[in-house]
Image (tube, rainbow, N blue to C red):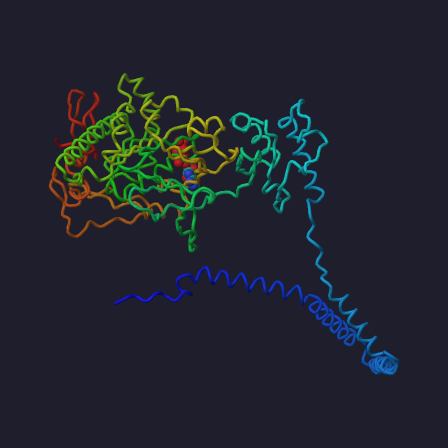
Length: 582
Ligand SMILES: Nc1ncnc2c1ncn2[C@@H]1O[C@H](COP(=O)(O)OP(=O)(O)OP(=O)(O)O)[C@@H](O)[C@H]1O
């Protein structure tokens, strides 16, 4: 049966409706213009009537008779006088028009005195930067006209700049980072410190836009973000550079916030992440946030050089292969990670050659989170042992194809202690806490277009994914739930996201820390004999490796032992390190 076309109003109804709305708006505007005198007179008559009413109400009752008599006499005289009624109507209309005139004061054009003073002083401050002696017609000159230099400006309610457009002469070297940085530094000082400003240089038009940025929200707690597998939310940013928003819950409230989303996996162009920051700037918090998101679809290995136990909440959780705080454990785990990456690569290549999809145990994402590797570098050098960073080489180089993602966090001043492998292969970068423009440019590979401020809340910084733009970022609050200083709401938010504890093979379970309910073992799971996997472990541990609880396999291991789970001269508790079985 032939389909009948939709009525035109439905097929291109949007355009028609918009046109009709536009027509109606134009007609209304024209009618308002034509009827303006009538509207004014009507408004005036209403005002006169209400004034008369007020007068009548204010007149004492004993004098109302006299007033009425006076009014009646006037009406009579007017009625009897030649042209009296006509003149009276004209006088009434004139009075009404006068009373009905629009009395709203016209919006003041131009800045007030203090705003003009601010603009003038900023102009004067820019003169040395934007003028040369040879310029015959300088845009900037002492005592010159700021109006020509600042074509647009906006002030906030406190009288500080909210937005400013600055013209500059064509010979200004706006392509040079140092020249730009000098101007940005001056402007952020003159426009008021303590706020962040965004600078947009329009080189073609020779003008610069300065915009004061509102602070990023610091109260977003850890939560399940609406993302696809392979996507990790690093933090939240300004809506200017990110089109996407994520629905977030904040207490009872829901709001949409633009996120910085990092994509990992085989198609990622930035498969590994480097986080740097001043001490206390929130790098461990970001790693915890990444860990909680990673555990949704993958397995996790944590190596903590800080050794402050900030990842204790993850120990023994489903999907967490190990949380290592000591040098020996770090070496053991990272050596295993190297072998696991190689095993996955071989499996993936073999599957490709045979025309099969890669096996499941090579596809499940494996995350290696390394916090403060520089601390281990010192220890290893002192001990004459291998730097654990060198064991990251294979996961960093081949991790993308093997679905292995490496995240490294360290202090900003330890950048030189990071190995070439880490620096070359971590194309996703985050800098947290106070940092100079030079430090930002060095780590991110591009200058930030906002001014860094001295006082920043923890978790605030900049992120850049590959060659993309530099984003201002605020990491969601993901504190250590075992830290006493953590607020109850934030602690609970993190506890809610933690996966259940894995049942150890001998059926024992560590007592849950305060604030957490003990988790009953699943009904179908029975304690397995030592050395055997539980059903759950079979599900969560990729084939080819096996979880070895400390109690089940104390495993005294020496440096001569060459199995992947064994490195180092001293005894290594095997803990939950998964060992490659091949
Ligand atoms: N995004 C955030 N929102 C709220 N508070 C945060 C955030 N990030 C960190 N904090 C708080 O700041 C403090 C320091 O955080 P964290 O331990 O993550 O810093 P760090 O950079 O790892 O420090 P260090 O390297 O010295 O261990 C903690 O009290 C933490 O709760």
